[in-house]
Amino acid sequence: MRELFGTDGIRGKAHQYPLDALTMTRLGVALARRLSGTRSVLLGRDTRESGPEIAGALARGIEEGGGRAEIVGVIPTPGIAYLCRVTDAEAAISISASHNPWEDNGVKIFGHDGMKIPDAVEEELEADLKRVEVENKTIFELDGEMPHLIERYEQFLLAGVKPDALRGKRVVLDAGFGAAYRIAPEAFRRAGADVIVMNDTPNGRNINESSGALHPDGLAKRVVAEGADFGVAFDGDADRAIFADDAGKIRDGDEIIYLWSQYLKREGKLHGNRVVTTVMSNFGFEAQLQRDDIELLRAQVGDKYVLELMLAHDAVIGGEQSGHIIDRTVHTTGDGIHTALVFGEILAQSHARFSELKTFEPMPQLLINEKVGSKPALDSLPKYQQALAEAHQELGGRGRILVRYSGTENLVRVMVEGDDNARIRKIAEHLRDVLRDEIG
Image 1 (cartoon, rainbow, N blue to C red):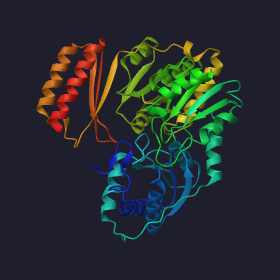
Image 2 (image 1 turned 90 degrees about the horizontal axis):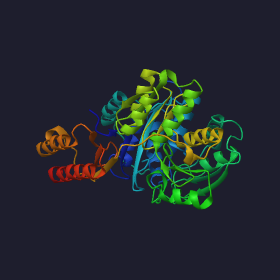
Image 3 (image 1 turned 45 degrees about the vertical axis):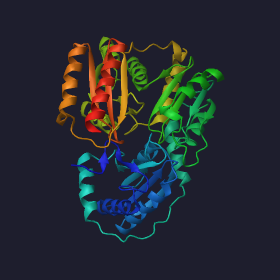
Image 4 (image 1 turned 60 degrees about the vertical axis):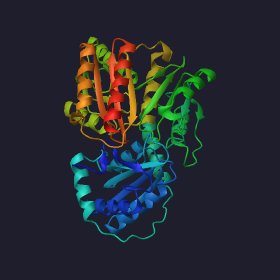
C-alpha cells in the first residue's frame, strides 16, 4: 500500500513532509541504491521557488547512495522523460506539482524507458526509504541547467512535425508561468509560426496563477483579440495542453483526441481503430466514436494508467479530458508542446478554420471539487452511499456518476453526466454536500 505516492508521484506542500529535505534526501538514497549501471539520474524542474531546494536534497541523497545527479534545469516533465530514454541515464526525476498552486511541489520518477515507474516499484521505494538513515544537515539549493540537453528535447519536438509546418499560422501560447515559458515559444517559432506569448515571466510564486490550462478564458479572449488561428494553454509542467479555437471556444482534451484520431484513421495509422481515454471522458465523445467505428477504452485517471492500457491494446493515441495526450508513436507520456505542434500541423493540413472542425455533441457534464480533511473509503460512508443510490435512481439510467478522490490534492471530485443540466447540478451539489458533512 503506497502512502507517499499518489496517481502522479509524490505531491504536497513544499518544505513539509514528505517534501521536506530529509525525506527527499532519503528518497534520493533509496533510488540510487536501486540502480546498477551508469547510476546517473537526471533532475528537471518547473519554475516553483522550492524546486532548487528539493533538487539539492535529492542530489545529495543520490550521491550518498552511490549515484550521480545531473541538473538539467527548468524543463517540462515530458522533456525529462524523453531525455532519460535517449541518454545513458538510468532514471529521471521531474520536480513539479503540475497544475497545483506555487506553495505545493512534487516529484515524478521515470525509468530509463521514459515511463513513470510502476505502482509496485513506488511501493518498494517507500519501503526502502523508511530504512534509510541520513544526517539531518543543511541542504543547499541546487540550480543550473544543461543547454545541450534542453536543445536535444527541442529538436525532438521539432522532429514531430514537418519543417515550417506552422508557416503562416498565428498562435497564442499561455505558458502559465511554468516550465513551458521558454521552450514552447522557441519551438513554435522554429516551426514557422507567428507566436504571441502570455504569462511567460515566472517569479517562483506565480505558476498557474489565473493562467494556463486550468484558466484558459484569458487565452480564448486573447486569441480573438489577436486574430489568431488558435491558442494553447499549458499547465505548470507542460504535460497537458488546452486549446482555444479562432472563435474563442475552449476545446478540451476529448475534442483534440477526437480530431487527432480522425486524422490518423484517414491516414491509415489508427492501430485497431482504437483510442484510450479515462473514466472522466464525456459520454458524447464515446458515442460519436462508436458511430465512427472507433473503439474507446477507458482507464483510471492518470496518464500512466492511460499509457498502460495503450500498451496492452497497441493503441497509438490516448489521453485525458484535462489535456494530457499521449502520442505513442514517439512518446511515453503526455506532452503539451508536442500535442500543440502536431495538432497545429493537422489544422494547417485541413485548410479549414479550427472553429469549423466539428467533433461531437457533448452530454451535459458537471465536475465539482470539494476540499476534504481525510480520504476514507467511499463505500464506508453510509449517508453518501444512500445519497448515491438515490442519485442513480433519479438519473434513471440516462447518465453517469463518478466520484473519486484526487490522487494529488486533498479533494473529492464529483462528476455527474446526464441529459438535463438542472438535474445533474442538483445531483452533483447534493452529493458534494453529503460528502462534506460526512467526511468533514
